[in-house]
Image (cartoon, rainbow, N blue to C red; front, top):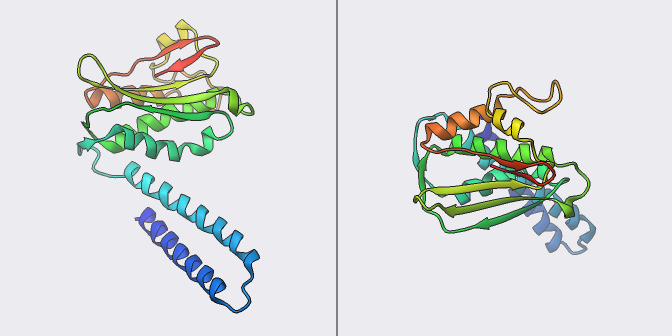
Length: 209
């Protein structure tokens, strides 16, 4: 309900910004210097509306409801939600191959993608965006399943860490920065949807889920 009212408020804001902009243009002596901040407001409000729409997918209560989902669309929505985390550390790259729709709960799948994207961003030190990337890839596997790769150019992990990664309460983050439950929950969600999740990583070369 709260997200619905936020979306209504943003729509009202966009409508009024449009009216003010039009009146400025139609006035006898328009103050064109005001148009630029109005455009900034419009862009910010449009971004909020997009994020709210993505969050509404995330907050659906019908947890067990499954629909046919294009995972590329879901990835795009989650990437917009994670943009603030990615912006200062890496370039986001997309390599979407043609894939079949999958019958899943989109809210749960979004939760998995968001966790993996935020983890990828947090693994990369900020400040050198041009040298780092987070790459989203979709493709069909040899067994007819849809495969989604989320690959980063972060520091990578040791074999021992990879073996323990999906263990509840295991975390590589500093004390107080993580619960160690995120990846365990991701694994449970993916398996409940009939899929599998695996990790490949190498120290100094990055990680791929």
